[in-house]
Image 1 (cartoon, helix red, strand yellow):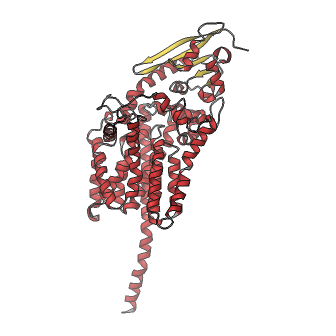
Image 2: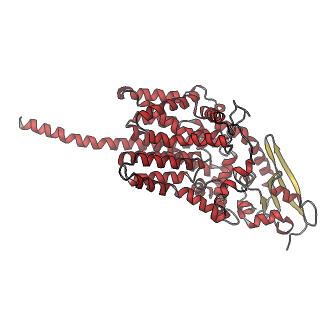
Image 3: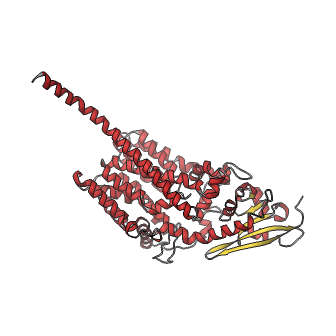
Length: 529
């Protein structure tokens, strides 16, 4: 071989490592580009829903935003304002935005962090699928099914909590993918921390903890028990914190489950469709999933799970499949009602719970994309993504988006009386008058009016509120009261119609399908000294 030939051969050999190192850099650049695109999409969609007036159409969205606000804007500001029942992490994330008056009053304070966690969740899901399947087209198909679902796109534009839990699940999936490849304790700890965060966003994530622990144990290799214990230690921090929180503030670790404001107390033993009927529970959740995910995604995802299992991705299937199982179980116990328009009682309620099936369905689509040869996998993945999105492409009307439709149907009346009550109260209220407030839907009237929450006395203020409601003749100092008809504030105000110090119900606002909201005003007599 000539010197020149040896030289050329040497150059050829030296070129390959440079090429190899450029590929990860290129992949990282594409991944960051995807994150930027997701953030841009979230911003544009959120702006559109804000202009439409749908940011706070869900009653729960209004409540989440106002809880975040009251942590710093209350007569008794501080940690206790996190309250119980609703988990605290979304409120903590919204808090810096809710402190800004303009962002709070418009609802944008809840939309900004929702958009960010939505983008992070879809991005992490893409990274997890790419690592698990070793295929960018497959990961892109799954991420498209996840990120372009219009029901999720709507919820991320609101203060609702579903995007937070989905992002936590995606983060846990990514760490499980790392654990599968490395069998390292730090990856197990990362998965545990991800689910600990998720356990502080929504309760269904609690159901994932034993499933993920089993996955870590079974694929842990040498020292599997130690790694499972590491995972369990970090994952348990979320639920343990919440139990301790409730014990500290309410002297009952299970206050969120059985307390005054719990779903158990509110539902009062009501039997919903699916109660003690496994087939009915499955049918209701499956129907909701078909409507919220789109039937093509629901069924392609189910078929793709077989492909995932054939590729030995059972750990991911175990983790992601636990959420739909949780909801079917909850329907069976009547803990979680889900109503869809094509099944009795033919209404919209909690349809967003079907988004719990989105991760496992999107993962199934990613797995299904890998069944084709690499040469045509990109085309096949594109066809799968298009099929998953076809219900929204061929029937683009927003009435087809069950979560958005539910918010409009169930929230329209509340938004109407919120505006009407605000128009009455805002020009008449003087700073310092004080408002006895039922901190539920009526709190939206203060936000709409631009009245700081600290002007009100509400449930989060503890003993002062309880005293004012129990003995308004002795402890009520506020000039106004805003409440829902028949609630305990309303009943307390009813006691003050007569006597030396009188209050009068000056306005009542009604709307179809919604409880009336009342405004009371002090009209006669001196306050107690």
